[in-house]
Length: 321
Ligand code: 8YV
Image (tube, rainbow, N blue to C red):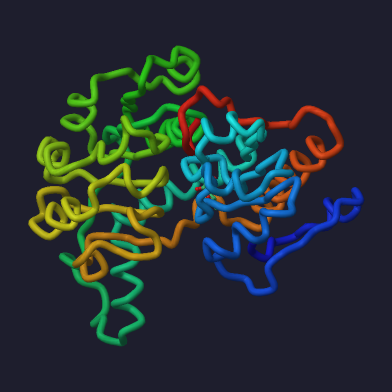
């Protein structure tokens, strides 16, 4: 559906797979997606493509959907299973890169990097002053992680360099993660109350939808910084705008939004929000690794072999797992 970064579709064509794609680099409309899928045996999809029962009905030859993301909340797994279609994702290759982005947002929001950049560029910065753009201390504080999957663990590991205490909340305790990161399991309420930095790395499921709503925001510390590199709908974005505007929490760093590319009313005008356009995995190297894995999954299934990274149809959706 979209133009892919290097290596593009070369691994597919090198393997003798016939590739049909949309001429323009933009999200496919629903009609275009159904049309492209109708004659295909494999589909390479993006988080903006809804892959559901209607699509499987329209694509009787389809054998595999290879989603260019670790999250797969855009795919109806039950419908895929009913139609005998294998779904694959791209776990592992983007873990560390997405964790780096979580830290960029934490540091950027806490230390007011974007506000500072704007001020310097405006030509109105009068030179150093003792009270200018005071931010929040990061080192030595408490980091809370909601969703201790591979990305949550990678975020937690980085915290040791900052001398932080790490807390986490998950569907279930992660003893391996605890041993690797010194993170401590707490209830969701304790996570909200005790975190100076709260980082969301959970997948989007019915359970995690709007986990951070007005009530949750009210339980957070007034000087807390909220970071989301999971999925936008983990947060009730309208409630977050109110909390940030009223300084009920200090700041937020968001890589994902509830209705991408739209923003909740008022979000764009808030100085205490750092907003990044879903760049979690967006480095040259990581995107190349994702594209290669996506293509290898397609080739494997089309050649009658097992896919490298199939999605477990009974597992949770989302980026963090
Ligand atoms: C992707 C992501 O870049 O993997 C995911 O789930 O959110 C990102 O790493 C994005 O989904 C683009 O496909």
